[in-house]
Length: 168
Picture 1 (cartoon, rainbow, N blue to C red):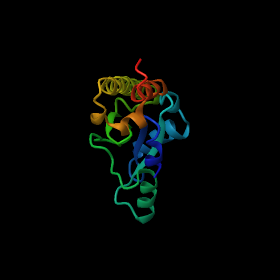
Picture 2 (picture 1 turned 120 degrees about the horizontal axis):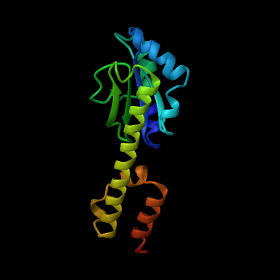
Picture 3 (picture 1 turned 90 degrees about the horizontal axis):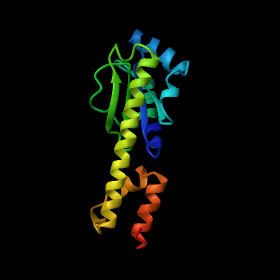
Picture 4 (picture 1 turned 180 degrees about the vertical axis):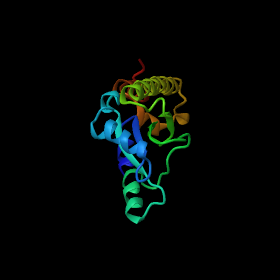
């Protein structure tokens, strides 16, 4: 699925919209996605369009699965359209939703930028914590999946040096 492939890059922005029944979603899709207005706010994140169908037929189910695979939408989404930011495990890290925040690309984009900035700051803190664990000899407790997938190149270099015995 597109989501599984995107998980190697962080973060992932899901534009979830009511695909075959919601006129507001369709209008938002037109202005945000087709006219590419929201992309300047995504800050290099992977951007995926997630059509959410009401009573989907087989073709619509395949279209959804092409994007999401077997994964459902993350918990915490309560309205469409919305912009959901997820991490490499598919966990929701933040969402822009509701009529007031999704009224135009600029308003939604400003909120999206805040969520992505918070996400990146959280990842930096996590990386520092993981490196500290390595340096403190707690490597058996380190989540190596997160090290591999989430570390910035400079943090990965420090972790490699720590694991190699080249203590800083």
